[in-house]
Amino acid sequence: MGRRAPVARLSDRVPPVASIGLGPVRFRSGEVILQDTLIREATAADLAGILAIYPRAFPDEDLVPVVRALAALPADEVLSLVAERAGQVVGHVLFTRCRAGQGGPVVALLAPLCVTPELHRQGLGGRLVRAGLAHLAGEGIAYALVLGDPAYYSRFGFRQEPSIATPYPLPAEWASGWQGLALRDSWQGLSPTCLVVPAPWQSPSLWQP
Ligand SMILES: CC(C)(COP(=O)(O)OP(=O)(O)OC[C@H]1O[C@@H](n2cnc3c(N)ncnc32)[C@H](O)[C@@H]1OP(=O)(O)O)[C@@H](O)C(=O)NCCC(=O)NCCS
Image (tube, rainbow, N blue to C red; front, side, top):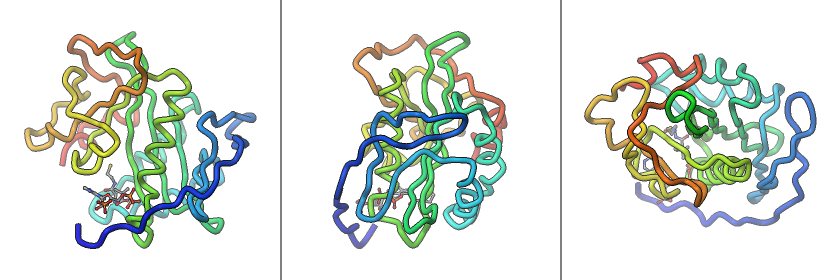
C-alpha cells in the first residue's frame, strides 16, 4: 500500500445536466468535478473508451464481454458512470439493478469498477462508487451489494452480507468479499434469500476466482 494518495479536492459542484439514452435524465446527485475530472452517466459514445480501460486495469481477467453485455441492457437495469478527464474516459463503474429474491425488492449490484492504472490513488474510484450509491439512493434503491476486497469496499461502509446469497455458491476464500450496504433508512434487512440477476451475470465463472 506504500505511498499515500494525494488528497482529492472537490473543486466544484455543478447543476445536474447529464443526459443519457433516449432523453434527458436528471442525475440527481449532480455531476461532480474532481479537479479536472468529471463524473457523469455514460452514453453509448463512451463504450469504446470504457472497454479500452478494462484489459489494462484487469490484466489477468477478461471483463470486456460482461461489460459489453451489461451496457446493452435497457437503461433502467443498469447505472453506468464514467470518470472523464481531458475528453477521455479514465474510469468506469456499473451498478446492475437486481432483485433480492424472486419478486423481492430491487437492490443494486456494484460491478465492475475500474480506473486507468496511471490515475490510481487519486480518489477517482471512490468518487465513482460514492456518486453511484448516491444516485441509486436518490431513486429509492435501499441496498447495494458488491463482491470485492473488503479492504477497499469497507471504506464506503460495505460489510459482509448476512442474508442475500450470491446466484452461484462462492468459494470459501471469497465469502468475506460478498458485502452489502444499506443506502436508505427504510432498509430493514431480509430473511435469507438469493440475489436474482439479469442474464449477463448468470455465468458461474463470474462468481469464481
Ligand atoms: C480498485 C480501483 C478501482 C481503485 O481506484 P482508485 O481510483 O485508485 O481508488 P481511490 O483513489 O478512490 O482509493 C485508493 C485507495 O484504495 C486502495 N485500494 C485500491 N485497490 C485496493 C484493493 N484491491 N484492496 C484494498 N485497497 C485498495 C489504495 O491502496 C488506496 O488506499 P489509500 O487511500 O489508503 O492510499 C483501482 O485500483 C482499479 O481499477 N483496480 C483494478 C481493477 C479492480 O481491482 N477493480 C475492483 C474490483 S471490483
